[in-house]
Amino acid sequence: MRNERQPQGIERSRPSPARRRTAALAAAVTSIVLAKAFVAASPAPPAAPPAAPGPSATSSTPAAPPAEARPPEPLEDLGRADKVHLAYFVPTDRTPTRAWREKITVLATFVADLYRRDLARHGCATRGLDFAFDADGRPAVRLVRGKHAAAHYNGDPDFTFMQQWRTVLPEVEAVLGRASERLLVVFAETYDDGPTRFEWRGGVALGCRFSAAGGAGLFSAWILRDAFCAATVADQMRLLADAAPIAGRVALGCGRPNSPRFEFIEDGFGAVAHELGHAFGLPHDRRKERRYIMGNGFRHLRRNFLDPDAADPVGFSPDNARLLAHSRFLAESADRDDTAPPTVALEASEATGAPGATGAMGVRLRGRATDDRGLAAVLYVDPQADTVVGWADLAGTEADLDVRLPVRLPKEGPCRVRVLVIDRGGNLASATATYEIER
Image 1 (cartoon, rainbow, N blue to C red):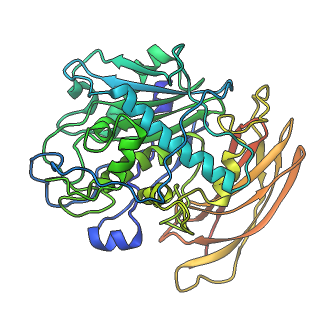
Image 2 (cartoon, rainbow, N blue to C red):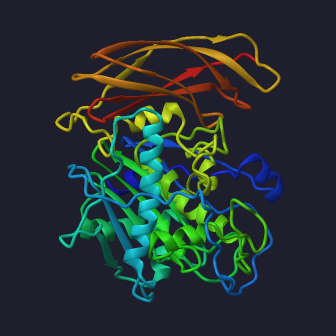
């Protein structure tokens, strides 16, 4: 049913600690497993002074990138069966942005490079994401004309995220195929130019995993504006290096009026990398907020391209990298004939020790994972802190789980740990252990 495919959790990814102090932003994040889909979405940000309407960019010439900068490698057709399909959605009362195909290709090039290089750094055998290509040898970007005006999709004046998910995705699926069977990345011209607290009204960034073979990401097309997205990689590198203020607008990761150009680019390009992670089934990992893509590291992605030899590149945690390494969209040797997910059975276990000063304590988790063809990896997630807390490689068709984990105690109610198990076919299973804590 369609309602099983709607985001049930909502998120606004938090800025790094320093930026939180500057911006006084709060974060509320939920990742939910529903109908075997891992879903993440983005709600309205906390209150802040509305941005005054005005020009969306200064007239200054973008700065040249530093000499040590490294542009991303161009996209190539890798010939795999599981492709990433790009779409540009335009309602009836909107006009396609200039050079939309070239801009979306450039954005995908940066995101793909981020995935490929980081997974190689983790020792994962992958050539990276494989995008669908047209017969002319260029990445395929399908223009999908909406059946209605923008307000039908964005819910003006409420601009609800689930409204966009429920209305845009079905029309794109009617053209490109169901998201349960392929990975769809959609940029939607459904935002509004009016004043707002952060970026643009109607901005959206959602990611959802439906199966080993499919998922979806839905993103606002404000990132395709000329101020932020170029038609060539060389020009995009210049935009990424530029700190010129964008008059009358506030980038979420910055939190200050007239935020620098590159902050919007990091918010937009980075959101695609982050939400694609959710479409692959990744949970958040907030242990290194400024570095991990599934934390808020994506808001610092420009250092990977402008300072590629830096000691702290933006990337995935080793835990999430293990999950990605077995995704059909990245693994070179995934068993694509395997359509049965693993099973996870958890035993009653116990909390250990007493809550510490930070409200955290240890729990012991025991259980068993099985698969008909071959297990690959397990991740442990603390839902209270909304972060990964551990992982392990698995092998064979059966594996015992016995681990002690640090978790944050909720203010009330039971303490929980979520377990994610992926097999060598890219199928994912989830289970939750619950602990009653004496207070």
